[in-house]
Image 1 (cartoon, one colour):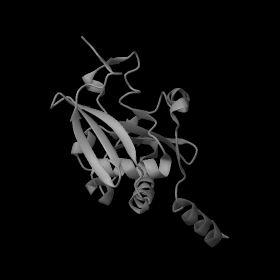
Image 2 (spheres, one colour):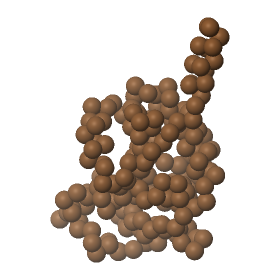
Image 3 (tube, one colour):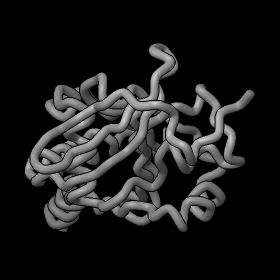
Length: 182
């Protein structure tokens, strides 16, 4: 009986986590549901995914999960751009039906890897979550996308894309649909 309990416990511990993306239209529900969560990056151990250029990870995430939960265009809220909110994209997830997780691209197409945060009370599960995500991303074929990114350090807008088998980051003027604070 004890052996059966130990085996069941070990199997549960090593089951692959189910990672479900939060769609943009469900972002408010996600924020409300997890408003009291203490976020942490602990547990998301450095691995091979952190050595892949963010511009490539974005194309693979698009292939697996579709469009991001948020892009720089979504985080402006009132239509006024704030440099402190300069992200390229964010993917929000619920892991195993109860664990919130976010993946953010804060450095746009100029860095490798992304930023990972999850609920601090589940920090012990994050290494397996990241391993599962890493396996899915590295095995996925990239899918075409186009995003915008503003680099506060360079004071420059970029069009970031994967199209026709090419990754590009092009300097552009401020996109016409984005209003800057005066």
